[in-house]
Amino acid sequence: MDKTIELVNGVKDIHAMPSVIVKALNIMKKPTASMKELGDIVMYDQSLTIKILALVNSAYYGFSQQISSISIALSLLGMVKVKNIIVAVAMKPMMSNQGDKELWKHSMRVAAGCEYLANVTKIMDSDEAFIAGFVHDVGKLVLHMSNEKLYTKVSAAVNDGADIIDAEHKYFDSDHVKTGSLLAKRWQLPILLANIISYHHNPSLSSIPVPCNLVCLVDKLVQENYNPNNLDKDFIKTLGIDFADIDDLKNTIIQKADLLISELA
Image 1: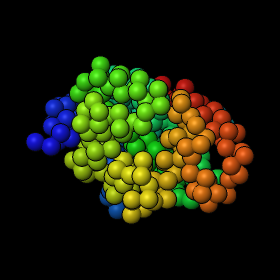
Image 2: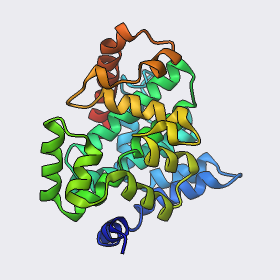
Image 3: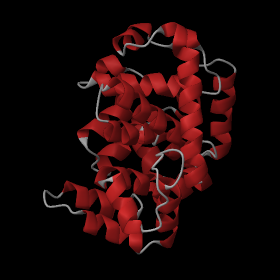
Image 4: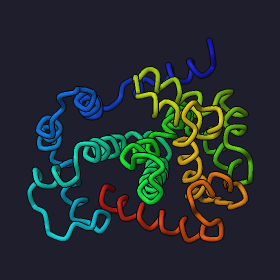
């Protein structure tokens, strides 16, 4: 049996997405999707309601008035942002408890960074950029849940300068891109998200390289072992960003992301 299939099959808790995400994605697929349908998911989930109200009143969105009605909060955010928040909140327990403790935080930083850059550069839809950034490393869940102690060796190797794909192959005979790609197929994720998961380390191989390049850039910017020499200067130039400003951009992204994380944590 292929090692990637063996790894994914061996992690039973990840075979299905959390039911609240399935419901939200199914609603969004419908041409007649309504905010009421999406709102019903939120309103019957106390935790989601509290987090969305906290978020809509936070500095992350910066609305001028205090909002205490969940229906008003939902209408201000819009359907796609609400769906993105549902996904981020619903995936947190799986990522935090069964995966690396830092995986959810990193995913949120990449999501917020992609959203911010998409807003600034107009390179793609900012809501799509957020969810693309959030799911890019979902394949790491499989490796963590398969053998958490072994994955600490991967992390140690990466901290010492090893390439993460090489390190994962050394210890698992597979990598998070392959396990993530298989998950994307089994979960029937949209083509955009499947491409991000499969090609965020090699954007030029994707049929839609621009979103993959965006995720790749932000992923590298928010890494603990950030190295500006690893960034794609040509892509940064296409965004209209001066490479001399890249450290300021990094700090802005982390600052904005941590606002969001503090509200949803």
